[in-house]
Every structure is written in C-alpha cells, then in structure tokens.
Length: 285
Image (cartoon, rainbow, N blue to C red; front, top):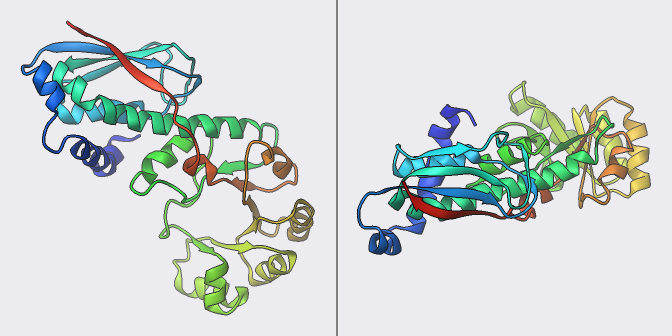
C-alpha cells in the first residue's frame, strides 16, 4: 500500500484497534516487562495460503514505537503463497511493543490474508477466460480499504470503492425512479459525466430495458444459467456484463464460460475465513 494511503487512511484504523485493545494500558505486559528491553519474535504460518497486509502488520508496531521493524524472509511479500509451518519473518523492537501490538497486528494480517487466499482460489478458476473477478461493497464496516486491498493482492480486481465512485442502479433505485429508463436518464443528468452507469437486472425484460436506456454495464443478478446465457447474447457487446449472486468456487467457472466480462462476489470479503498465523518464540537480543 502506498505511504500516503497508509498515513491518511490506514493509520486511523490501526490506532482505533489499538485503543480498543488497551484503552487503559496492557496489564499483562506491564507486569512481566515493566522496562524497555530489545527482543524479537517470529511470524509463522499455521496454514497454507496467500499472505497479504505485511505493511499493515509492520505499521501496527511502528505506531507504538517507530524503532520497531519487520524483517521478512526471502520470497515473503504481499501476494506470495505461504505454507503451513513456514517462517515468514521476524519482528524486532522493544519487547513491550511486541507484546502489546501482537494481537492487533495479527488480527489485521490474518483477515487480509484470508481474503487474499479466498480470492486467489476463485481467480484461479477463471484462468484462460476473459472474465475478471471483482469484489463488492459487502465489507466489514471501517475495514473496506484493507479488505479491498487484500482482494487485489489475491489476484482479483476492485469494483467501485464506495457510493461516490460510480452509479449502480439496484431494484430499489429503479422503484424510486419509476423504472429503468427514468433511473438511467436521471443518472445521466445528475452524476458526473466520468461516472459509469450500471443497472442491476433480474430478468431478460429488464436487460432489454437497460440496453434501450444506454446502460454502460448490465448486472445479471441471480438469474438462472440459461437466462444469463440468453442475456449475454442479447447484449451482444453493447454493454459490459457482470454476473452476480451466490457466486462460489463451485459455479464461478460455469458463469465465466458464458462470456461475461465480470463476476462479482461478496463472499470474497464477507465470508472468507482468516489465514491462521502466529507470533512465536519471543527472545531477548
């Protein structure tokens, strides 16, 4: 992650997490390590997966003490595949910082690495197709920037980051406007001209209406497989196509084989398990 984004956006996330974990100090560490003493601790993978968020992991300790440093093992970097039992690197610094920052640093790294691992698995199923795997806004409140970065590191792409980036007209927007044509027209009138307009469609009639209205992207949402195939043929390249709804590793390839441009999956961020990691073997140096 670039240093400007880290400073402006991610530092606040980390600070909030640290305050939550020790708003009145770390009683355990204060008891066993009351004075500054240099130490190091090993970061170890406890499962196979894709690592993501090493810079966030290191930054957690740096915010407690800028003299703390993470030294990764050769070949260990964000986006790299790791194996159970593998030594990923060592964190060195004041033992009090290592002990107090451990849980927050691991929580963030495990969460990001779990998302990257799930993304990597699903993206691999699209090999040889034109289809791109993208995420959604179904993210943990307050952690979106980290979770979307993890998707990218796992081999996926990011859909719009938030409501300010693009127009996506869902069923309730369409109802509020009085129909697809009216909703698209209102979006063209009011949204910045650089914004794309995407319309969520649940059947072939809606697809035709979205085409007639000039949508840039048509989302085929929870449509039956045969209907989705008909929709792709109907659109015929006149708009980008996105398949969405209950996408998982078992059906993603069959969706890609329809020729859609994008497949979006909320499961990448809302259902990915963590990648089990651990800090072990603290020693004084």
